[in-house]
Amino acid sequence: MTLTPEQFVATQKANVETFFGLSNKAFEGVEKLIELNMQVVKAAMAEAAETSQAALSVKDPQELFALQAALMQPSAEKAAAYSRHLYEIFAGTGAEVTKVAESTVAESQKNVTGTVRVKLYKGNIMVGGRKSPVSLYNPAIATMEADPTKAYNQDDATGFIRLNALRLKVAAQVQIDTRWLNVIGLTPS
Image (cartoon, rainbow, N blue to C red; front, side):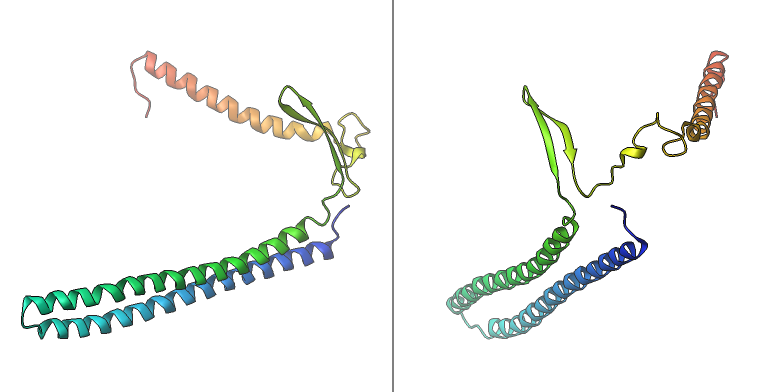
């Protein structure tokens, strides 16, 4: 099965839409987090002003200890509330991302069908064969021995082989030149 240009374009369009959808969900989560943190900072600043005023009006050490004790309980409750809000933001964003990811994976796997034969031997698993009605494998071009007009043409590799050989020849020449300079006592630059 080969994708037509229309199918390819549709797939790419769907991928772009998915990407921007996930990006929007992530930014919504970040916006909620920023909003929560702004609320916390505003509340903390207001409390700091109130606490400072109360601390300045203390007349004896017992009042100071009572004020300190009174401030500790709400701080623990606020930290727990902040943690709950964080969890709700992350859980909500994570659930939305998971939903999109699951639908994307389900869509990508709709053509994954067929059977795979495996061989088990001494703790190893080896693929013995595979068969699928939807496959990229084409037996007509899977061999290098077939008619060159219908399959792989071995002459196509000669240019690659020459280019790769050139790289290896240059590397070998540089090593020889470097060794020669070391032999005569010069350091390569």
